[in-house]
Length: 312
Ligand SMILES: C[S@@+](CC[C@H](N)C(=O)[O-])C[C@H]1O[C@@H](n2cnc3c(N)ncnc32)[C@H](O)[C@@H]1O
Image (cartoon, rainbow, N blue to C red; front, side):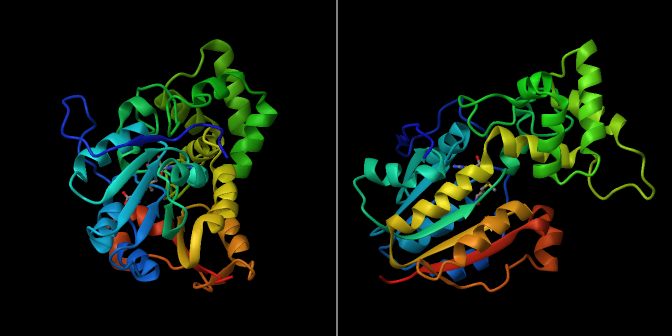
């Protein structure tokens, strides 16, 4: 439980200050729909609205007699979804998906038939210069999904002891140069505080040894990922959600989780091992095929797992 009250939002018309059209491409859309097997009239929760691609497919599948409850921590995603999915059977809630029971209580709904979690970051967040998710952004290094909750990354980077920073970068980023990076951050911030994403990316690049051939990913990828996971307490949210979702899933209901990080995938795998709660539908995780990876490189690291709630 996050302790925050969900904010329910209805579909709304265009407003001049609303966020631009989504640039996010949903991953594994066919596999999501196949494992969820949504029928007309069902009640479905999309716990990670993002750009709304999966929500749209779910709304079309439940039809006018059903309902999709679309949740996101990010107020911009909620605002965009409420505008772009107007006219569809969707209710929107700005909330943490670990607060799914509180969202359902606020809508006077007891149980739902399907839940989807497609965790992590959307391309819309990455493209928003003001959020600091992208290495070349001059905006503040914020990295929060909900910019009104918790501490922005720039503050953590400028105040945390180097040992603790190194632990975060090592654990959540699986970065082998974590200690060097943390030491360099500590040295640089003594001269000038690190403010923007570009500042941090530069510091990281100067801390890691040059590699030949150059690495496939930007040298700061793992550090940014680690800080984002820490700032948003992403693993904690997922752990709590996996415990709480079964309490509001109808018997025979299904949960699909797409994760992008080995620690997240491990949590899902462990949860689905509990046979009193789940019948596991995916012995090993489902991954994107070559064609999807070429079309949507983000899908490269996606892992999908699905389970059905045991009928107790
Ligand atoms: C990968 S995107 C989802 C993309 C979406 N499935 C689509 O088709 O466009 C992940 C989204 O989940 C949101 N998110 C991440 N953690 C969350 C949490 N604990 N609770 C609610 N939303 C979360 C992020 O803000 C982001 O918008």
